[in-house]
Every structure is written in structure tokens, then in C-alpha cells.
Length: 326
Image 1: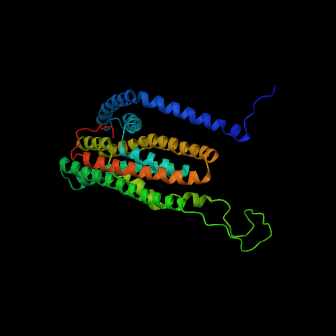
Image 2: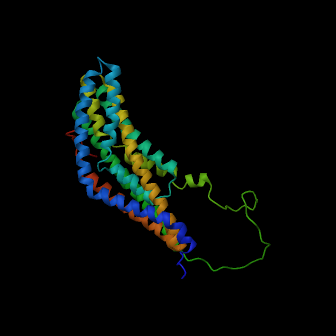
Image 3: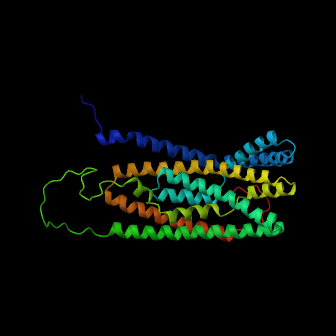
């Protein structure tokens, strides 16, 4: 009696399929319990927000003890604040799912976007309240227009991604010209230093340029131009009780906490894409993969356009609380 043996390719791929199954099961569980997770996150944010306002009141008298605790609570608040739905997470997850970005590039985008969001909040409050000494209503109006500008950039990113996807799709569907033999040359063994002028494998620089600098900047600004509402509220309170520099430090700690959560999500999306590419190359034809990736990018561009348009329509000129989940 002979045992049924799997092909060598299938034996090599079974860990990848197992990992994909685990990821799908984990995603299903998170989806099922997401309302409870989000509700608990909001409750914890309220507790942290109350504690941070009390610490801001104590920081002038106890700068070492209260200040360190304030930074830790602000970091935790940023981590929880980024768990809720938001346009930044839509942008980065859609972009990384449809573009071959390296891990270094993915982490750089999420970190810069989170720091930019905190920096915009600090810059807005500093200019409007500290330098120009305008009213809080004017501050909220400035935040509103920055928010609208961020949503415009989301739609611009969707247009740019769609344009590149259409070009890639046209190139993939272009018929391959018939092979013509003009001359027969001796067999040549390629290596890295053979000097034949052919590119055998994409270099690290070429992989880095797969997502251009302009596209990266558009992703970062579309995510980070909208100021963090929680940071603005902390800065306002710090300005009122005359501990503004501690408010700035708290806002930057929030930005770092946001970066932790968004970077973890970006890492998961980037690794999942790599896994899908490996499984796709093993189980599909090369032509199918060439067509599938531009199609996914085209779907991603539609998601960005629709999300940007809906957010543009729903933006409100006044913020009632620093506890908005996104």
C-alpha cells in the first residue's frame, strides 16, 4: 500500500496556506467582537482624558512625578485613540494593500503621518491662540478647513492611484508580440558581475522607488493634515491653566501612541500582501497576477475616492469634544 504524496510545491506552500488561514480566522474574530472592542476603547479614553487633565493641573507643582505619568497616559491615549475608525487607517490600509511598498517604507509612512498629525495640531493652536491670540471658534474653524483639505488629498490620492492602475492594466493586457529570431548567439550564464547590461533582479533602490517620493508625500499629507482632535483639546486646556509646554509634550506623546497603532496595522497589511503575492505566484499564471494587481489598485482608488467624498460631505466646522473616535 503506497502513501499519497503531495507535489513538492504543495509541500513547500502548506505553511503559507496555514498562516493565511490563521490570519483569516483572526480577522473574523476581530470583526465579530469589534463593537465591544471599540466601546471599551472609548471608555478607557474617557478615563485617560480625565486623568490627563488632572495631571496637567498638578504638573506645575510636581513636574517630575506628574510629568512622567502624563507622558505615559498620553502615549496610551494615542494608542487607544487610533483604534477607532478614521480616514488615515483607510488611506494606509488601502494603499499598502494595493502597492508593493517595502517594510521600511510602510513604517516610515505611518510614523511620519502620525507625527505630522500631532505637529499640525501643535502648530495650529500655537499660531492661532499663542501668536495671533484669536478665539477658540476661529481655531476650530481653522481645524475644520485643514480637515477638509485632508479629505481633498485623499480624493487626489485616489485619482493618482487609479491613473497608475489603468496604465499598468493597459500594459498587462497589451498583446505580446510574436517572437522573431534575428540571430543566434552563444549561451551566456548571467551573474551579478557579468557585465552584459541586463537587470537580472530588481535592486533595493528600484524596490524603494516602486512607490515614488511624490506618492509617499501625498499619502503622508492626506493622513496627517487633519489635526488630532484629542491633542487640540489637551493643548487648549494647557493654554488655559498656563502649562502650555506640557500640553505640547502631551500632544507629541499622543502622536507617538497613534504611530504605534497605525504602524502595527500597516505592518499587518503589508505582510498580508506579501503572503498573498507568494500564494498567488504559486497558484496562478503570471499573466493572471499581472492583471490582478492593477485591478486591486483600481478598486483601491475607488475606495479612496468614495471615502474622501463622504468625509468631505460629513465634516463639521465645530468640534464638541476631544474624544471623537477618528
